[in-house]
Image (cartoon, rainbow, N blue to C red; front, side):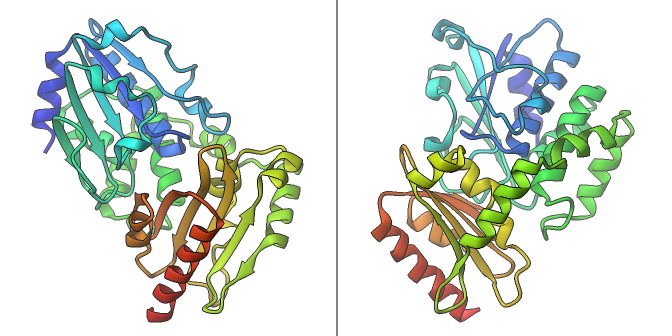
Length: 312
C-alpha cells in the first residue's frame, strides 16, 4: 500500500509535512512521527514541519513549527497528513509543491494530492505512518515512536473507540519496542489543572438536550472571552463532556469563532458523518466536525441530528 508513497519520499530532496488546522494529538503525532522517520532514515534530506501552533499538543512535536519561504516548495514534496478536505489543511502553500502526497484515515471526500493513501479502517493517521515504517523496514527512533504513540492513543480514545483493532495493538507493540516512556506521554496528555477542572464543570452546567435527547453545548463569543478560551477549545476540548451519558447517542458542541460557528459532533452508535458533510465538514462515522455560518444553521443541524437519533 505504501510503495508509491515511499518512492515519492525517496525521490525528493526536500519534504515539507502539513496537517490540518487546529491540530489534535493525531495530527501533531503523525506529523512529528513522519518528520523524525524521514530525518533518521534519509539524513541528507531537508525536512520541515509547518502549520499553526498548538498549546495543548505542541509538546508532541518537541519544537516549534518551521517558518519557511515559498521558494522551498518549488522542488519539494508536500505531505498532507490527517486531513479529509482542502479547506482544513494548515498552510495552503502545499499547492506550490512539485509533488503532493496525502496519508489520511478519514472518510474519503475528494482527491487532494497526486498520491493518495486513505484508509478509514485505521484508528489514527499515526497508525498509518507507523504501518508505513513497518512495511518499509524503516528505522523508528524513540522520538518518532513517542509521537506516533501519542497520536494513536488520542485518536483511539485510549483504545476505547471501535476503530481500535488487533492491528492497532500490533503497531503499538512495535512502537513500545522502540523504547518509549509511556508514563511521561500519558502525564503530558491527561494531567488536568484545577483551572481546567473548573472549566469542565462550567461546560457540564451548559449541557442542553433536544426533543430526541441529542446533547449539545452552545458557547457564544462573549462567553469564550469571559472563559479565556478559543472556540476550538470549547468544541474539541469539551465535546466529550457529554460522552457516556445515559440515553444520549449523539452529542455536539458549538462555539462562535472568527470564521463561523465551530461544531464538533460525536456519537456512540449512529453515523453522524453525512450530517457533517452536508454542512461542509467531514471526519469519521462517529466523530466529525464542521464550521457553520449562523445560529439558524445550528438549529437546522440539530434537527438533522434529531432525525438521525430517532432512527437509531
